[in-house]
Image 1: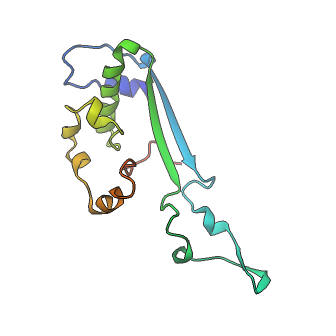
Image 2: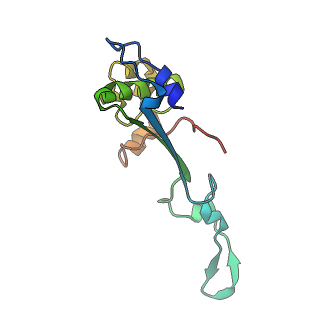
Length: 149
């Protein structure tokens, strides 16, 4: 993946930074509740106080609204070994995200403001995100995963 990021040189750079694949360290982190995309509560049995010998499942509607809708998350972290070119490396990563239709990096507007307007849908807030943004505006919803199991 470092090779792909090194090839994603933004056309807006005024100089040729010359970042190579060996200048990047890419760390893909997959997080889940131990069951990939499945809801772990589906495997939990509950008991009623009146009959402790009978276990039952509960429906999705009976589960707390505080539980997440998705049970798997992926983060991609890119590190640059060359301290002098960190600003350019950030722009490479934003360009790579654009090229691969990934969610905008958390600081994409800050590190590469000249790149992010190219993806018009990155700047559009969907109706469900407007509602959710009141609760947690720092967590964007991912478009796709890098690796599908």
